[in-house]
Structures are given as structure tokens and as C-alpha cells.
Amino acid sequence: MRRTPLGRRLARAAFYASTAAIVAWAAFVVPLPVVEYVPGTPTSIPPLIELDGIETFELDGDVRLLTVLLRQQPTMPALGAVLSRDRSLVRYDEVYPPGTDRSEVLRLERERFARQFDVAVAVGAAAAGVETELVTEVVVVQVLPGSPASGNLTPGDVVVAVDGEELASAEQLQAISRTGQEGDELTLTVRHAGEQREVTLRLATFGGVTEPRLGVAIQTAVDEARLPFEVSLREGTRIGGPSAGLMTAVTVYDLLTEDGLLQGRLIAGTGSLDADGRVGPVGGIPAKLRAAAAEGAELVLVPRVQLDLALETAPDGLVVLGIDHLDEALELLASES
Image (tube, rainbow, N blue to C red; front, side):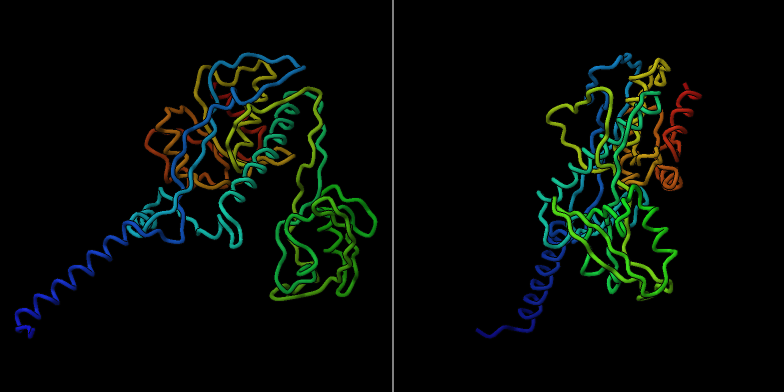
């Protein structure tokens, strides 16, 4: 059947319309390789913690941990997040690295939460005057391509000793490598998955690094928290990541003292915590602040390094304070009470 000019124009119009409809549908339905932080439900910390073998005091108020959910978004909602200062996007492969699945990432994040919980309890108890001990280890977190460490070390390796000298902190290894010369050899005793081995590396320059280095990023992590009391986390707690550190330590401190920091208030916050009580950055600040406001929080604590972002994106009327160290948080809460 031969089409007339009018028929051909109508057919083209129908084709373009259907194509546009498919593109529009895809923009709203097909997910991009990015994920967005969306507000989670703030979690009350005191009911999660049980301390046995030590005197505790009743809290007058509540401490909420701010959490986020990760949601993969289609094109149009993701574009909206890009254009909005109070929404956060991250690349999909930064959250779920190639070769891993969601269940594995979730398992690792829950392990991070468990480790951070132990640190926070110990640091909070120490601030309350309880004698505690943190056993630390030096952990590899990144290996630079083309460096002496490349192919010899992997993230997650624990560096036990250097040239037979036991390591207690990342700063020890960093100081040793900084004082070395090009070509100097360092023998590292490394533990991974319960197995120990020795690795000999030569200090060298590589890539854009002009000083002789090993080419590895390391950090001091807590291997074990030794406490004079028993602590347990409520069974079934399903939280991942390190962002509960600050507020867990605040809660433990208030449970173990008569200071009464809360004064009937609902305090919320987020931030990781190291063994020295320093507060570190976390993800999803804008989404967490929206959740805090919706929950009716009277005060929110965030890492100081993220205070500018927090102030720019906080809902109107929400009081936000930046924190560098647990001691600072305790002093601020006492002065605000």
C-alpha cells in the first residue's frame, strides 16, 4: 500500500511521539549508575546499649543516631538531586565496588558499625573516668598504583611490625618511611585473614610522588576494647557504617555519670570517632539533617569539618553544632543544658 504525503507525515509524527514517550519513560524509570542518600529513621541509641557490671544512671532525654538510606535513582530524579544543594549523590561503584554485591557490602558495613560501637563505648567510658584499654593495630586502607606496595599489600592487611619492631600506630610506620632514603629496604610483618607473612619493600619515588615512599595509606584501628564491665548491643540491630561513633560515646558517658547532659532534650547527631576521641566526617549530612528536623531534634551535632555544608543545608530553625572531639561535644552539651 502506497502512503500519501499526509500519511507519511502522520507516520513520522507518530514515530517521534512514541520515541519521545519511551525516552521520557526511561528518564523516570531506568536507574543511573549513581545512588542518592535519602533520610532514614533516626534511631534512639539508649535502648540499643546494655551495660552490666557497672553503675548506670537514668537518662533525662533521648539521643538519636541519624541514618540514611541509599537509593538508586532514575535520570530525572537524579538530575533533581544534582541541582539541589540539600541532596547528595554518589557514584554507584563507590558504594558497591566492581566484583562485590549488595549483600557483601552490607555485611562489611555492619562489621564497621560493630567495630565503631566498641571504640565509642570505650572512649565514652574513658571520658566518664572509667579505666579502659584499647588494643590498636595498623591497617592498610589504600595502595597507590605503581608504588613499591602495589602487588605486595592490599587494603585490609594489618602491618604488625617493621624490621621486627612491633607497631602500635600508623604514625610509627609513617615516621620510619619519611626518614628513609631511596632504595632503603623495609621488611613488614603483615597479617591478613589470620595468616602472617613478611614482605620486603624498597622506598622509591613513583608517579607524582617526589619523596621516597612505600605508596600505602594506613590508619590506626582498634582491634580490641578491654573494659571493666560487660557491654552488649541489642540483638537484631541493623545499622551499618561508622557514623554512630560520636552519639554512642555521648550516650555511654551520660549513662555512666550524673552530669545529666540531656536535660529532657532530644539530641541528634552523626560522626565517626577514633580511639583518641577525634570526630571524623560521614556521608549524607543534608539527608540526615532533614531527618533530624522531621523528628523534632532540638540540637544536632555534626563533624566540624562538615559544619559549613550542614549550615547551608539545614532546615530552618534547626540548631547545628560542629564538633572536633568528644570532649568538646560533652562541654557544649553541658553548657547548652
